[in-house]
Each structure stands twice: as structure tokens, then as C-alpha cells.
Image (cartoon, rainbow over all chains, first blue to last red; front, side):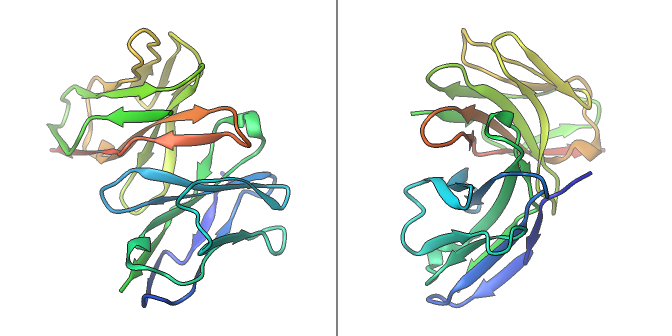
Length: 114
Length: 114
């Protein structure tokens, strides 16, 4: 069964460092998403991406965050200068078309900022 | 705005017990409703869904009925197994704006003891 792959599974970084989280969506999917879950809290929408541009972003997704689909297979989330409060599990998801209303999620990347 | 509220966990049950995890939602229009499950160390997996009022989603012995009059989508299973131990997320799919996206509840940890 097709799956969404995320790397790394866990990353520990120092505050102020840049982090890139990588995702390989399902190959024929067109819509891509990042969500995050701070420990014990809700799974929150960060950003959606279609046709090489951001479709929608939440208020969490400030100027420190960016997304990119550099090569037609990877979908990356970059945090330019990490803060303690960025510590969370980050989930990538993809969907075949906008009306599909079913997202396939990766296993997540746990980010710990010290 | 659109939101999902689900019961706090953890829920601890003995094997073969009956399970209910409550979920209510607030939404404009007619959202689709979902239950996702996260097994330890894995990503979010779709468990079941319902796309309109009175629809019942079911999978692996779990079921949930879309109740528009009570804005609820409670998850039930008649006889839980140890292998059902996981975190369960209720979610709704919102339409409109620049994109469509899932909005999640906080998740409910289910622990089933032998």
C-alpha cells in the first residue's frame, strides 16, 4: 500500500538552529500538508501546498517556516531559527485531489529543541 | 469557527469491554467526519469516515454515526482487544477558503489490558 515517508523520525537541535524536515508523499498525489502536535495537545494544521505554492497557512506558520517541493518528489518543511516552543511532532500528509477528503499521513518527525 | 471536541483520556478498559469515545463538533455547512488512529510509533491512519448526516462509518469492528442533530460522531466498539490500544483522533474536513483541510480533536489514549 502506498505510504508517506518522513525523515528524520527524531531530531534534536539547539535553539536558533535551522531544521529541515523531509517528506516523500504518495507519488500521484497533488495536495500536500504539514500538521504538528505539541505533546499532549491537538494536531494542528500548519500549511497546505498545491501546484508549487502555498494554498493556505495557519497563524502558526509565521515567517520562520517555509515549505518547498524541490524536486517533484520531496516536500520539505524548514524552520529557520528554532524556538523551544517548536518542539513537537510534525506530520506530513498528502491527498490525490482536493475533494478526496482523505489524507494519508506519514509516521511523523519528532523535533526536540533544547 | 470549525472545531472538534473529544473526551479526555486516558481510557483504560479490560479486554472484551465496550468502548465509547465521545466526539462533538462545531462547523458551518456539512463537514465530513473522521476517526483516525495512531498506534505506538506509527503515523495517523484513517479508521473510518462518514460524509453526511445519519451515515455510519465502520471498520475493524469500530463504528461511528454522523448525528447532525447532536453534532456528534462518537466512536464505539463492542469488544476491545489489547491490539486496539492506541490514540484515537476525531476530525472534520472543512470545505471552503483557499483549500480544504482536516481539523482534529486532541486525541484520546485508549489502553486495553488483558
